[in-house]
Image 1: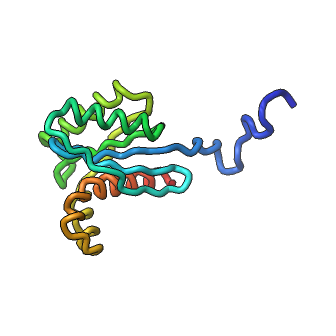
Image 2: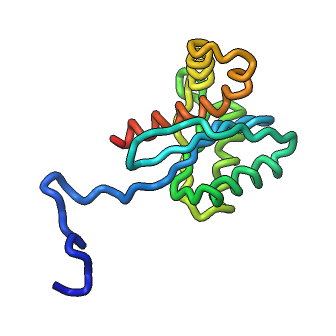
Length: 157
């Protein structure tokens, strides 16, 4: 054997080796608040992390980039809001622009994911938990968690 690891270049009987596990951050973009969730591809789990609340776009972008670096995320998912029929609207363009701007500032891979109905589902989840006022404050982070859970499920964890 050469100096490479024992398993270097080996293929499984089921196809190429899976990508290495990584830390993933998801963002539920808003013009005032951005919900953030943290996940991991190894466990396939996600949890609400924080809600970024700033009036100006530059501060929200800087705060988001700082979180990506702080958590050493290798992958970033930005929820892309669309109408129920999948067509774009004004927030679709804003979220896409946020994703592009964030990608220019961080070393992580940044992609968008469909976020249809995540805010409503987050409200339902928090209502079930009887979260009250604190639930309303966490709604955007829970929406980001749902975006991330959907992304993880789609990639087969």
